[in-house]
Image (cartoon, rainbow, N blue to C red; front, side, top):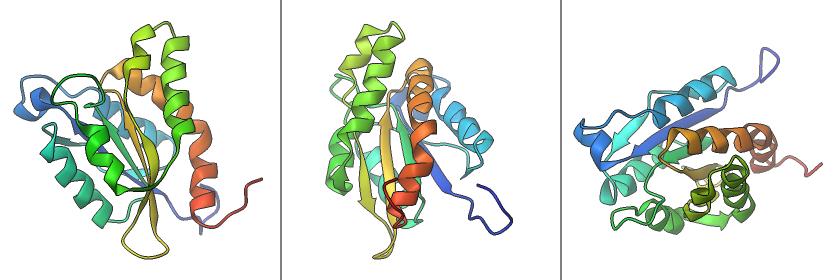
Length: 171
């Protein structure tokens, strides 16, 4: 984000966790993602913390209504019965970006965490508030380490992805 007229991209971070929403477990991954976004020049409010399942669906809908460039979710991508973040994300996507989700899982495995391959997180483009508005959504694991691995992958590709969403070239 350079120059005085450059638009600052906006992001929303949603922490999907029954325990964090109930206050019995501290949210570490959401604040990490918000801080990473801010350091990278993004506008992002503090994370929204919601219970798994329907709470995630509502939070995603509310976030999309605000027309952000990016929504990052953290949590709800595992194998547990209430880990439903991918299921509530998929209907919102007009195009899945499997390469992003695969790269995030691969980064975790390469970092020595073989269980990273169990994450069912999705990435894709959702329609925004208007015909020209599109929002990139990425489901990240709920662990701090998983979010660090995910951010390491995303930080390098987000500027190009946003440029493409805005009609820029592929070069």
